[in-house]
Length: 157
Length: 401
Image (tube, each protein chain N blue to C red):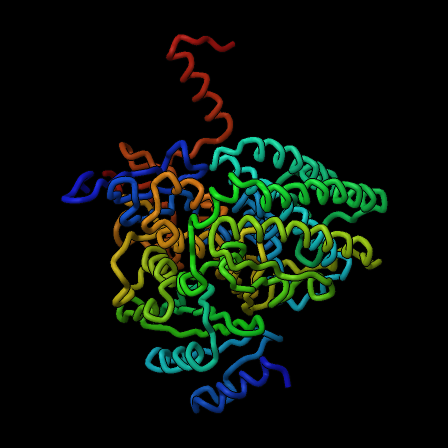
């Protein structure tokens, strides 16, 4: 059994709700989706017990009613664990992971700017990456967002 | 923000500044000559590429993503198509994988020699800049011959590569690699013996192993702080799993270490290129790829010259992707800059920033040019730009015919 298969088995045995739900796409690629109220339980386990000591990035997705987030955790032997979770769009917030990885701050600021999610407890800092005069409430990575909004002259200084 | 508070002087540097090659801005709080704290602001190159990808086909996206960066362009296009090929279940011919590896390594030579020159320039060693950039032309000419372009090679296609390589070309590459290897040996000698260079780079821009981990550094920046992670070795792609090479790391934890790592990597690269050409498999260079990619998702990693590049692609069964996410190595490395500059002299700032080999175009990816008076996009086509420039000069009394 390969290292990737072993890890898949360990995670599936540890969490009931992940029984047969960890997908091994190929060697070194694992995927799992967990409800947000279970997210930190799994995240903590992977980081502390299985040496996923590096966050490669966080991908944000607009899935209609929900906003989804994939945390790409990089661990031993080149394994990438892609842990997905989602929250209700504009109704719920996510908690920062900067207490685990200070490097995640810039990825979380990117989610705030481009996808319009509020990240709780994110340390104070400069927003990234949109311009300072970007109109409020415009989140370009949301599926219904269109660049024509910038042509209407409503965003005049 | 006030320029002077009770104890510190705050100096704004950038986004446009003679010491910076690309737009970024630093707000530096100084106590005397020493940096008390520093705030880095990036985002000036944000061009909306991720959003743009959702509105284009996969093949158009490959060309768009290749233009994220003018140096590690092959890194981005390969990283993207690897994810697409994984979702589509395409088996890329081995010969194509070897050619991708070859172009990727030639790109690394081009990038590392460019970096060495910039580093030399930033510490007042312009002879090094002249030498390395002269040698870099050798590899640029090779890339132009193999792909048709000095940058943005366009060698990739989904399912393989677009151009094959001939025996004559292989021979010319091998000869050029011999010349470059000799030159690199000379630079290594300079790095180990030239006292001025050693003293200027040692103990500057220090980043401990723990800080490099904590702040998420990647590539030569991380490897020079003792983190022996190289995607080519740890999560092999293209032909790397079949090649013999080592990931170069160092424990100087400073800019001197970053120099040693990049020079060591150049030597490994020459070895990789020789192995690729020696073992180049026969066979086709591409398989046919469908226009519509079945629904799925994949993450691809690539060891770009500056470190781990990551692309996430989600498909929905149509000709356009549902989502493309790019994390370029500079974004990961930028966060370590503040730490490297803590309690250092202001004069160290240019070389410390240059030492991560920053590429802010990669980092920001995604720019709208908005006229503040009208609030409108001010994007010109070629004819408009030409008319605008002719009028600009005419209004200043310079006549154009």
